Image 1 (cartoon, rainbow, N blue to C red):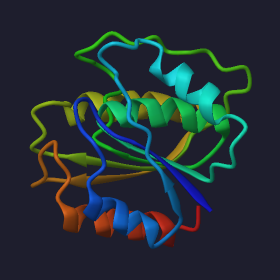
Image 2: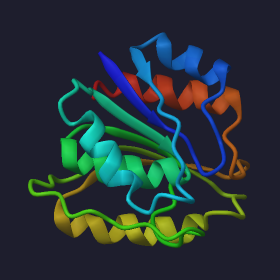
Image 3: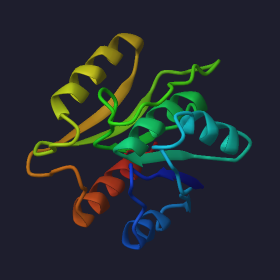
Image 4: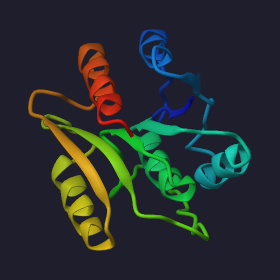
Length: 163
């Protein structure tokens, strides 16, 4: 099995978090430049469309990319504080031919001052009409960065759901 993990803006997947993911699958974690590439999501799609990807995960801006790629590849997603509504950098949202209904798990921090969890909840609520199916985990004490213990717990729950 393979996980495509997409880091956030000006961030990278830490060795500790990668080690957690590697307990479940092989991890692909490309180095992305969201600031200088408004077509990053399309580029990721083109780079990996012929690969066998089983799960797509992302944090913040990577959560934005993972959300759209999950639809394109029809794969389950695990999103940490995804930037689904307001982004600090301009990005084109590709229109994929066979977009499916989304499914997976979304983790939101109640103390996030970068991504407003209320905006994300409204966005996801509107997706219900399209048949999307997400487990939403609200972490009242979590800010924008996902602590290692929370990351480990959420990844474990994601795989427990047998996506």
